[in-house]
Length: 156
Image (tube, rainbow, N blue to C red; front, side, top):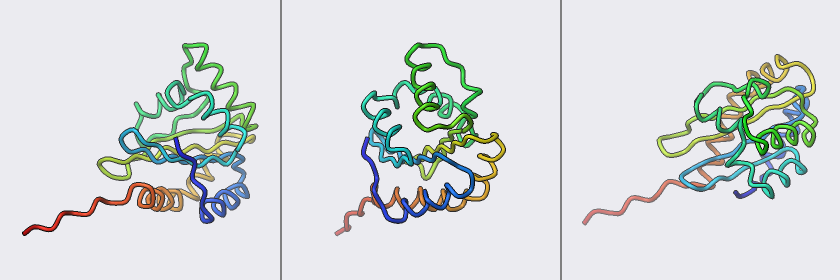
């Protein structure tokens, strides 16, 4: 997993925090590659060092429910590692409420995003509704930067 540093991304994270969202992440997934941004450096470090992506119950649930927000509190936790990830997410981001969602960008590329907060779930969902078009634009921008379209070969 590669971490994205970008001025536009940093501005967006700062803007979104003003809306009551304390945590935001966005990952671009294509084949076996993932590029991600995390608004919480502590959670980012934990997530990467512990290879959480493969075990995260929120991600697993989001894959089954494409384009649908998955409320973190609704996720079924069966394994100790899954419970560990869920507890760490709450502790390291400071968020008690939140959701994650996977959206298709194109046939081969998906975006996974997460919004979290300390207030009620509706505050987090309202912030997403407010920023939905900007999140989509940001996902498409990052996808084009990190997964540029392949150039077609010229025919003779």
